[in-house]
Length: 190
Image 1 (tube, rainbow, N blue to C red):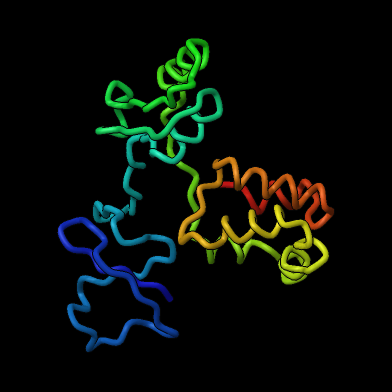
Image 2 (cartoon, one colour):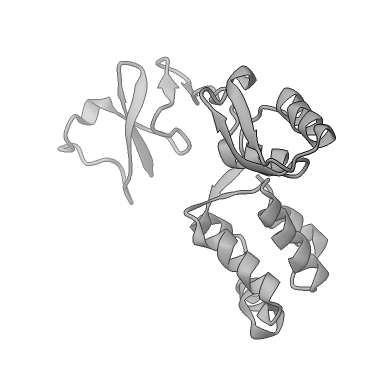
């Protein structure tokens, strides 16, 4: 049974017991049995409500990937990830006027959205044992690009599912027959 502790209308703690909460549990009167409420949810005395999602924001890696696709650049910067007026890029000297215009267009039009991010252990857990063995198998990894891309993706603590290298990994796993398109869509879903 799952229990959440509520203080001032907010869930501040969560725990589980095999049976009912022990009567001598500290502050037992502040604990409510509930299976889905999480820390940070509000409680109005009747209903638990999750917090609103954070405002959409851009991150520098995503912006760099998008701008560098259309223009040779050294870097990007942003003071406020929710305000594109604070975003900029440092073009390489060889950038042409058309490339600079394309980069300006990316900054003006790229969607500001929630980033689809998953913890690496949670991402790996989405694979069946057989799929994981196939993805880690020597036959598939014999291509240096496949092995390097897999290692680069899973080496990070968090995986941004919309990054180019992650999308390339997904396509490579399908092309090599390691995953079906349907399974890849499930594994790589936000």
